[in-house]
Length: 283
Image 1 (cartoon, rainbow, N blue to C red):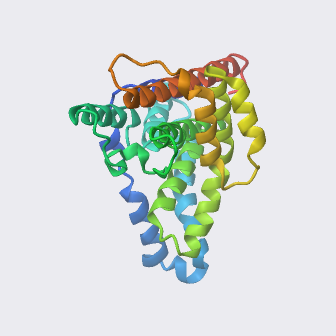
Image 2 (image 1 turned 135 degrees about the horizontal axis):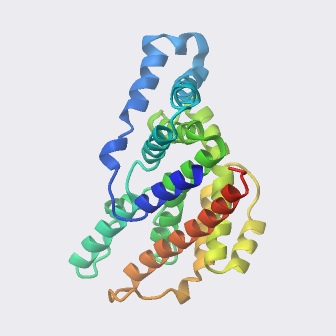
């Protein structure tokens, strides 16, 4: 059932279906502030109050799937799809890329500013290749928005996906100068470390593996460099100079679409792996 849930959600996310209104994450910030301030846990627990914010929803989710829905395969599957779709995102990367490319073409080749590309927000625009930040951002956002939640769903079930989603949301909500942010940043880095490397390998298998292996060897094993490693691996896997022009007549658009196509093929690689694990009864 895990494979089927992940497959359905990945297929929905990598097409142009929109679930963004369904998964607005404001409640995570409201919930944490209520726990920390209204209940006064920040006073008693200090910067560790976010642990309660994480554990309570995760415990309730485990209770729901472990006791309430355990006797109904259909309801468990529907609830699992809902949880994973909610924990993905919050934005719809396929629709954002499509919207960006349409806007770019409407501007007749004028490169829109980075802030007009929502999927670009995680990458600096300072790159020798003007298309580089856009291509790197596609891989990083695909990992953060979909692959990592799906990975933790496959490993820990709905609780794993929710834990990743909440840590990612709190990381962006909390004041970057606070002790809480430092702790949640560390938790997020732990949760993103393995998915980033697994997706990098998948991109290599779907593209060119040799350069990706070199990138993996060159990067250290620290927790804070996962995004940079994945970005470098995605460029190495694509071999930028060989990407195919999808027929829209523009190299910038071709670069972005080629990277997104590579990401889709990388997802297929791991869906095949997950299917084999499911067939062996391991997930």
